[in-house]
Length: 340
Image (cartoon, rainbow, N blue to C red):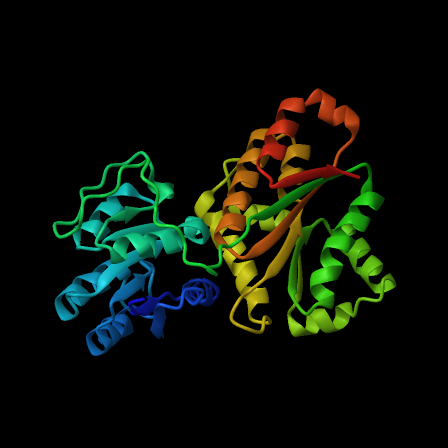
């Protein structure tokens, strides 16, 4: 199996670790450098002459587009895949016009990173599903893209795919909510992993009390940075625009929380548990469509990152009957649904 030398350029450390850990599941990939700055990326590309460069766009010192222009001159044989949360068709056109062969929207990276690398290393252009509906002219030196129905090469034996775990539980009252969330939180904390909680002030206090009663050393988890609890109202205010969740701001808020607990994670592969009630609060406020949109965004985050997500709704049977269409749409955005 031919070796591929990879330079990873990404300033968001948790996402850089996600890229590296995913690539390391395949023995042919050798990560020869990790860079968080655009100018340094140009220097390292000239020095190392990598086979493949995974390149972010929003970089300090020099953005990824300008860095790619310089890299193409200094390391012309290096293939480039852009990985960015930017999904503007104009930006993608500009990125591919530079000669990059791949473009993946970060939120879809969990499913698309390895297929993108496989295609690009064969000289084919890869444009991720987050950009469907747009036509992008293939690079001059690329092999024509596959037909949409033509399957990709199967993954190598032993390759790892990031699982989607985005579950929803409906509770009859606050007491059942606290029991369900406590059960979800306990296991990762006791095994040394990290947890993010986004809940109302009353639920956060009840959860702390229940965890203490169950013998969880929550003080140590907080001190180590493995337990982060934030207020749901403050979190919603950080990404709601005109009563709708702004996708870029949701990604930023989620990324900041993941980064906070990722610092306390040991080992190369990050596994984080997150539970919350952002969408449930929106539904309670009469913003059912916004709640469904937010659940869709969290589902994409679950697909794109190695993270377990639990959403909790305190919901009466009367509410489900009166707004069954919202209830069904919310269930459809999750990998599993249950009532307690």
